[in-house]
Length: 248
Image 1: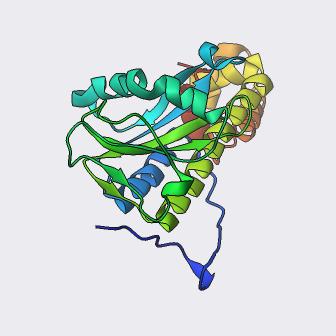
Image 2: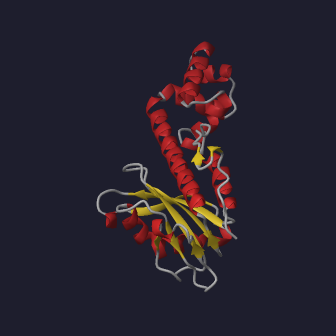
Image 3: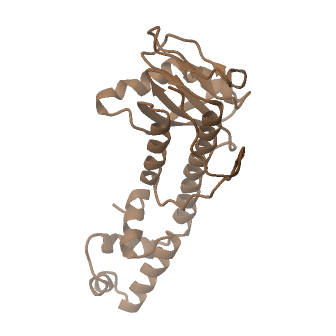
C-alpha cells in the first residue's frame, strides 16, 4: 500500500506550513511522533541527536525519545550498532533521507518515485526496514527521526511531509533545552527554595515561617519563578522545576 500526504493545501500542489503550539515538555512531542508513525503504519519511532563536536568519529548518537518498548530495549542499541557510524558521517555531508531493508526478503523500505532523492544504507543488518530523516540545526541541533516497519512504500510527498515534521520535532527539542538553560540561570536561590517547599506541600505561610520571610515576599518569589519557568500557575511551575531537576 502506498501512503499519501494529508497536508492541508490552499491550492493544488501548494502546501501551507503551520506553526505548532508551544510545548511544555518532551511528553508533548510523543503525540506528534505517534501521528507521524501512523501516517505510514510504522511499528516504532525514535529521535536521535548527535552529541560531541569536531570530527565525526568523536561524535555519538543519543536517543532522546522512542517507543521501542521495554520488551525491545535492545532494539535501540542494535540500531546504533548497525547504522550509528553511517548516520553520523551522512549528516555531515547530506540531508537526504536514508532508507534500509531488513533481513527478510519481504522486509523492505521503498520509494519508487523518490529514489533519486534518498540514500540507501547497507541492507539486511536488522530484522526490520526503516527510514531516517536527518535534521541539521547547528552544533547542538543535529539528529534524526527514525521510523521502522516490516514494510514501507513511501510516496514522494509523504517523505517531504515526514522530513518537514522531523525538522519541527528537532526545533522543539532544541527550544526546550534553551528554555531550560535560561530558567536555570535565571532562578535565584530564594526562588528555588520557595519552589522546593511549595513542592513539598507547604503553603505560603509555612514557607514564610520556614525561611524567615514575609508571606508577601514568599508569594513574590513564587510568582517570579512561575514567570521564569514559563508556567501558567504555581502547580505547573513546580512540575517543571522537578522535571528540569531544579528541585526534588
